Image (cartoon, rainbow, N blue to C red; front, side, top):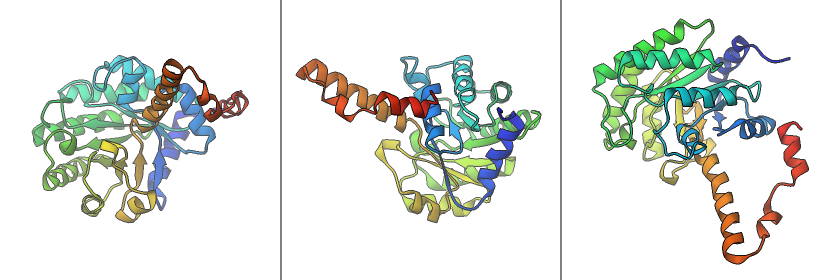
Length: 273
């Protein structure tokens, strides 16, 4: 029997309240979501980059409607709680952020993130405006008939402002505004991760794969991280397999990639077929 959205929400909240760290992987479609569920993960999250990639675009080039429709397909693929990468709310205003959260809740998402930057190549928002956007998003989240966990993202390190003190100041302001989870992609080293986590009272999400950077789950747990997301890394791993296989066929005329592929019966088992 399918879980209700309230049950999914309760499970998602509980993951953030229990001891230790959990990994929340990022599928790019219903099939990858089912595989990840079959492998034992307890929650899923969308990736804005992967969402754009399946539409043949680059990150930041899909609309709110496209992102929500993509997330809906992942939500409906499994009984796992799903959170979404909602970029900046698909607009600069506080109302845009609130509208996006309401739309997310409407398709069964139980969490989502709002960034403090207008997008690639643009600076981060002035702090007061950034806080007002989180407050509006949180008000929209709390108006839903279930607990929607709002993640506030401080984008400094991937938007040309690698200032750790400013990043911590922003995260603390978002925490004060009521954000359930805090997130700062692109932190340069484990010491920076440790400093950020020590400065916060609420759960911190670390994202692997920025410029190839990663730390072990054990190291991140010791640093105080509660949640580890994988961003586009699984999608890129899958696309790497596609590129390598296609190049072998095109350039060598051989099919060695078949020996490295999951047999169809095994894949069907993971898909539930």
